[in-house]
Length: 65
Image 1 (cartoon, rainbow, N blue to C red):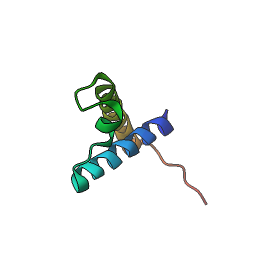
Image 2: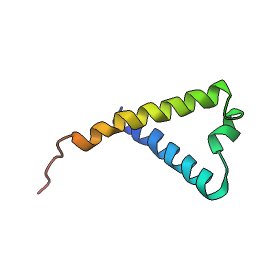
Image 3: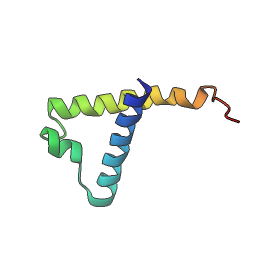
């Protein structure tokens, strides 16, 4: 689950980077516009992954020696 959440957060971050630099929304282009059902699902999954990823900040990290 952690890997999937991280992958979705990375996709979201790259998409926002493209929007900021080039005004190009890759998710919207791939899935048929910002208001299409598939795009909204992807945006929702990215948002949920971001919320889930907040838990990474509060987890105990393993110490390696």
